[in-house]
Image 1 (cartoon, one colour):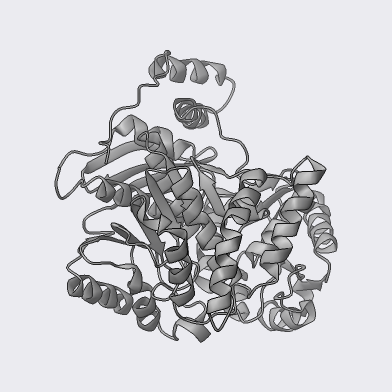
Image 2: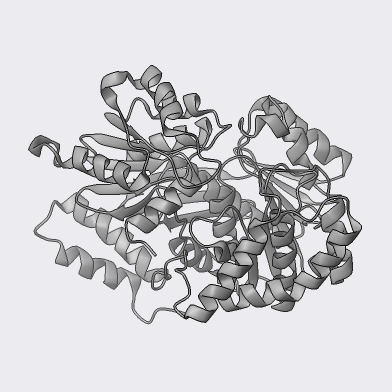
Length: 507
């Protein structure tokens, strides 16, 4: 494994001079605001140019687009991600016939209820800034299926996605013929990701579980680092009805001798995780004890952090994401990468501070308090359970000074929609209830019935079509001059957010 080292890519300009120049440009504005904005812009400059949109559009070439649609249709014909047979038997059989590609590289395995994808993106950015080639596997996707498999910080191309599918397809069919049930959509996708990472090849894989841990299809890897983001109630019909029961399932990612990076947890969930760590002789680093957020300040376009890692403090870290929850995700990601390099165990020194700053300044997390339009401001957030909704509500209230906020909510069947709506009730002046195009979408009228109980009849509008719901919400935000600072928050489901993103022109 290569050691972390300072980046050999340095900005020729002096950051102090750049800072002073930006302040000089802002002399007509409030001095305090000028300094804050100058600091944010300087940090962005040090982080390099912003990356391209992390959500790819459909292929421009018609033949490639047709081929990708054909693959998507074949995958869609399998068991969906919500239909599960709790075992790793089929995926293990696929790995066997593929030659165990998941053993070709070390892995960081991420479980938890909320924050997994954002944390995975941060870990990926840090590893890339330290000159490692990365593979990242996350789910679900916001718009394009190719988002799920990334190499070097970018989704694989449609052409490579098609090639990977065609490469593994004969082996998938071989396993299908031998098993009582065909491989599911998620199992095939997982096999494709592990094969693509081995083929690249990558130095390290960053892998997010689909659901749970013990019997999740991703759990055929032996992650040297296991990351557990905050656990809350979600998928209770499959994982358990208490945080402790859910933690028992998710603790399956903790392998013999691994290092566990444990975000702040409910007490009963933490106890389960610690017990499992003792059983497998794993080392545990806990947020709030061995690492954490020292301080955070709101900055233009994000927040400015001081983080305490396993190897010391990292100050003046700009994160272009909103909300306290993203600061905590950043602390978890930092500790995970330190653990991967043995910092806090074999060695005491920390990661290169400039590489850390550059990495965090480049992070994107589509659909997580993402601004996609102005006048009025439209924000997207994929919160789909009460804990995620509370984090989103706090983040919006902190980062945006909306005089009036209109919600657009489209949820999935089987979710705690009452808890989700109750989390948003204090910040939504009105809510437009809708549904996305997924077969799993909750009926708009059924969702509206719950919304009326939470918000009252006068604050609820029903628009079954998402495009009509967006138009209605934007109209409500614009309708009175005194509400010039009004905004719109679209939430309730990753699918709702992805479809809204397309409708609003982010492709």
